[in-house]
Length: 108
Image 1 (tube, rainbow, N blue to C red):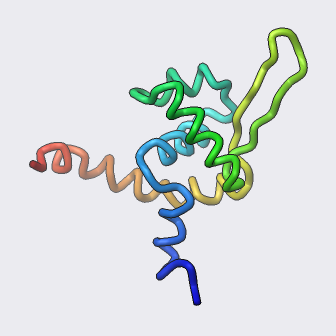
Image 2 (cartoon, rainbow, N blue to C red):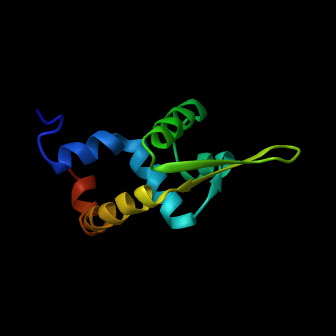
């Protein structure tokens, strides 16, 4: 028995929620980012939520966490090939949102 009812169901399960999509988008736009850079870039996300979402994205194989051994330690987050493939799929959805943003913002 299949765990998901369709491909969209599977995709939403792996990147569901507001924050994961935004994190993936910005990593796709900006390339590898440090935690603080991501926190500033993803407007409105708390430090705790960013940490949780990055852990889940890493566990799903969408994001790679790289620790550079230096003082102070430097940690960067980047998309994996799997993550890039999801961002490629999300790009048309983002374009649709931009095209219809005014209408969407006026919804009750």
